[in-house]
Length: 495
Image (tube, rainbow, N blue to C red; front, side):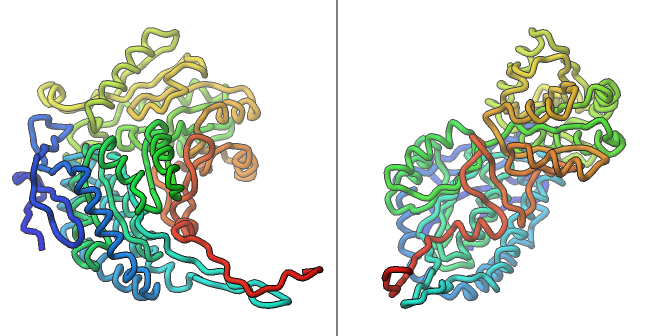
């Protein structure tokens, strides 16, 4: 068992470690993880894994695969359920740890960490009635279709929702009989490392492993290694395309969630009392750093002025500061590169024809502000649909709001993007909302809500550049298998 320590509010830095083949590796080449709300505070220390350690992780997972995959699915589910119980003690402390390394509010961090347990419980429940083989009608012989585990699965995770996103890949992979190597982001690895370790210690050695490292090194090794048969990746389109290129040499199965530019369509009959707070939450949760967050808002011209006014007032009431402060409703940006990008985007947008309104004056003190990656909410009006602030995935607290004249125009604008992850329609006419939803090119379209994380039982993924394959739900478990057909059927004439 680990001797590493950390406490709820961070007096003691968390000491991270690689966990490979059922054992921790000693920390070497330590790298500090800094609190984005307090840049002088070291949240924890992690080792940066090498190519050799990535190979060790794959070898450990490969060695564990035969015995793990040979277990009945019910036995794998039983072991995973027992291991999942280890996630409950210390949940609050891990949420605080995640809030400090990521910057998100403590409540958002708790939901992220709790996602590990919820995902595990959900896929354990699916295992009970999940069909692993079935027969097809065959007049001349017998045809059996069987689901076969694939082997080693690499789960490569970003920094914005690391625990939840990791376990959405880990849980179905393990239930299916695959073994797993997890690579966290070097920006936000600590709560995920701890969550994985708690599970891995209670599973057979090598079934679940975690290795840190740079994407260009360890990430590339995992996506090219011939013993890795499946890659589950969440991140940017550019990096995802590189992972696919790497994986193609050995024809790995891949599930890719590659971000979005999610539109919200506010129709003429929308109830602003419901719509404004709903859209506001979908824009600024985690400072706008979620693929599912609303990135652009289209409002019917009859409601446009009122919506902008009420949305601006609501955003101005937000409290920006350290996510551990219970009064805070929006924390800092998580990484220095993203902080720089969003500030550059704001500056660029100010030089254009649009109007940029900075709100959210209820914030931390000036001294604290200078020591964190804080950016207030910025509302942009008067921009063209083709401006970069509209077309890019901002991943920060800046939101363009634009009018439309007809529902056909709204659909055209919503679909005029390389992305297609999520969207939402806001209307009092639910039937109209359903009809419009079928015209939106997005993996998920919400009506009168916009969840910033898809429910574990809902298929999740994107159209176009937003992804490949589907996660969540039963489909995510199905995608962990190869299908094998065994047949004695004679292909005589007429059959």
